[in-house]
Image 1 (cartoon, one colour):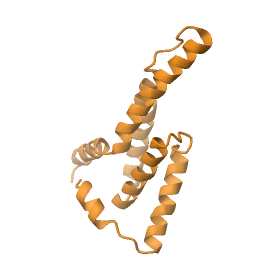
Image 2 (cartoon, rainbow, N blue to C red):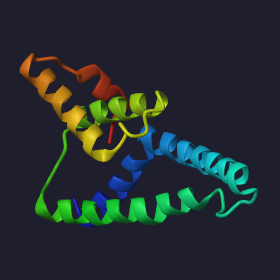
Image 3 (cartoon, one colour):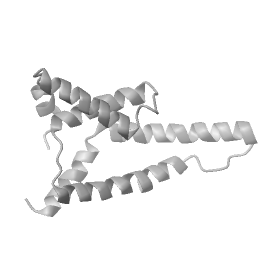
Image 4 (cartoon, one colour):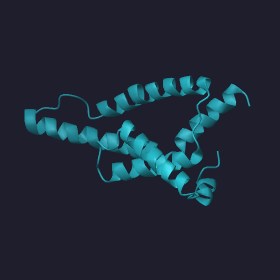
Length: 135
């Protein structure tokens, strides 16, 4: 497999993640809530309601791309079962409006603990992972 195919599959796998779309929606909602708070507090809008969305795509995805490139050349890989668990944990934290619990450190930690628990007690995710994650 050449490098361009791997990069293309990586971009496609990003577009398959439900957390990506949910986070975009919640960033837009947070931006409009911030503007509403600014107008209530200062009677004027200070920043655009899409400031968070701009920072999400520039800073967040920029750092993610750099880390992905570094981890690719190091040879780091993640199992699909762990990705499923990570998506479930993150979506639950975001839907329950626990934005502090949806930080990367906490979601990766909880996902790793759940993955280890499933591995230790031999809980299989075969049908779920094969059905939704073809890539």
